[in-house]
Length: 237
Image (tube, rainbow, N blue to C red; front, side, top):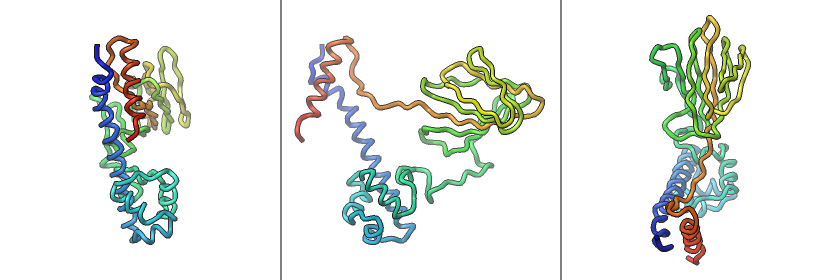
């Protein structure tokens, strides 16, 4: 049986991971703030006057020595005339990103009768995905089951679409929309004689961070680990 101290030591990599995430966040916010300020040719003093945030605080944020509060970020965003989310983006250089159609990522089935084009910047975990789907006449495309909590919203732009979820079917005409949980068996079928064009928005399931407590006996040992970690966290720095 592990002692509480041993379980606390086992939890240290997770604590280090969380601390590393905060450091990455500090760096990201700092880099974006410095970039946005430089693009507008503002000095720290000028931005401090425009935002009401002290020069010292702005300097700490840019140098990744401090994570600002939401209130501070809102003040700075208003002064820079950007969204608060601009401080958290990795892809946008000018507050937006142009996605040329000819360079878009496109997934095509082996028979070429189904394609999905990404309409959002890929390469990073995304809470929401946006795709354009093209489905050939009389083609059926099986859906990929996603983790519980994932939802899909489909809107038919051209043609018709039959959506099957378990053993239930829904026919959609041009302009119709449907929303369903994507952890269920589902498929898309074009029953028409012309290509169907569909837009799909996928809202991914949230996965909040969890303590990775060693699972030995399901009762007392896990509880001891949580209590030990809590005791360490409660100690004064």
